[in-house]
Amino acid sequence: MITENGQPEKAESFAFLDIGCRRVSESYGKPDWDTWTNGDFVSLSHILFRQTHVRISPNTLKRIFGKIKTDARYYPQRATRDALAVYIGYSDWEHFVNTQKWTARQVEQLPDVLVREESPLLLSTPTNSPAHSSQQETKQTRRLLLLIGSSVLLAIILLLVYSQSASSESSQLVCRNPVGENPHSAVFQLKYPGSAAPSGTYSILFGDGKRERLTSHDSLATHYYERPGRYFAILQHDGANIDTSTVYLRTKGWTVTANMMHDTSRVYPIDVARLFTGGRRSVSALEAAHAGVDTNRTFFMEFINSHPTQVDGDNFELTTHLKTSPDRAGVRCSQVGITVWGESSQHMFEVMRPGCAHWILLQNSDVQKSGQRDDLSFMGADLRQGGTLMLRVIDRQATIFINNRPVYRTHYKKPLHQIYGIKIRFAGVGTVDSFSLKDLKTGALFNEGF
Image 1 (cartoon, rainbow, N blue to C red):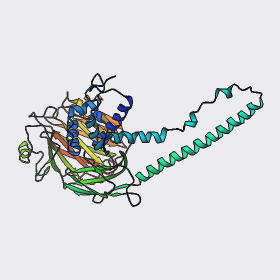
Image 2 (image 1 turned 60 degrees about the vertical axis):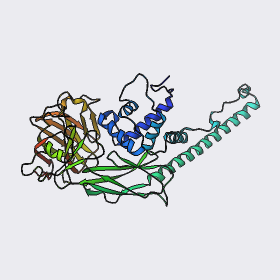
Image 3 (image 1 turned 90 degrees about the vertical axis):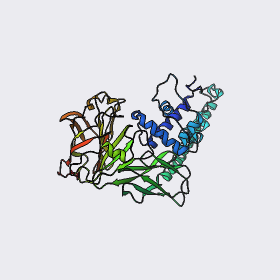
Image 4 (image 1 turned 90 degrees about the horizontal axis):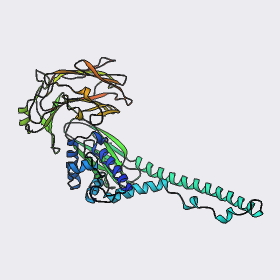
């Protein structure tokens, strides 16, 4: 069978490609690539070029990840596969494949003696002959020796696997300055077991879609974060996650940061005095343009208030009255998204004009939905003239209300614990008329500034 690009298909090759895609999606920070939008493939294309100097078009990435359906399974060229391997911490695709095969061999390989067949001559010996008794004893002895040998071999394999795992898992990623303001240059210290790093390839996924490959001599790494929020930096050893470190960028009250859909190289902080106080409820397109945003293209504005609170992320009520962007260039769905950061996870939901439900994302900690594979039409609403959104969470049961009508309810397992901040994201220009967030058990309020 021939693949789309003319290469012969091998089940093993596609198995490794699937593993590689999973590792790439984890490195990018969105493991469920079924939920990726066109902007994610554009962003990943830019990230790959910056880190590997190999240009892989968004459409090629879509074919690799199965976003573009074809009659034959697409298998990328060697240079493309090498670039993907480098991005996830390997020297090239061959190194990545050999590492997977080595791991499989350590677990699955058995000694030849275990599959050796008995000689037909032994099977023809009469059962009542002295030779038969001797052969029976010989067979029993052989089986006992094989059992002992197999047990010893299994113990050795498990010991080797455990030793390698313990060696890598004892490596630690520690952020020396995990809390800062925006922007923030985080300093990460790598603590290896013993005096040197175990053999293998190390990488850090910084939690914002960027990563850095390390050498065994590296003990420090720095990263520049340019948006407020809560990030989870992940240390990888030979592509496996072995440790996590938290980075938290705080704000003083509400801030606003803009970005353009196809520009992943920078963001645009907008300096607005007394935002959400003194009558300021929005940021105009003119103010965004003065900050450097090309307002003739699709752009987004993120209103963020990031600070530790006494509000329980599993028992609270958030209510806001807002208006989404009026019709303008680059804005079709007039969307708004609300994110609540917790200690270990987040709540996030989006509301868009009816007809745009395909692009909606919904998350309550470990429960995630995507309009690309789930029917989220109930989250469709036209809020250009204004509307009320509410998220009520009681003992890890979350309910979303649109204009005071419950539209969705779910129960999640992984608790958020303490709330660490809020993000309200508009496509284009949006207005927040009111906002409140309170703990349903203690009555503690989010210091929202309204």
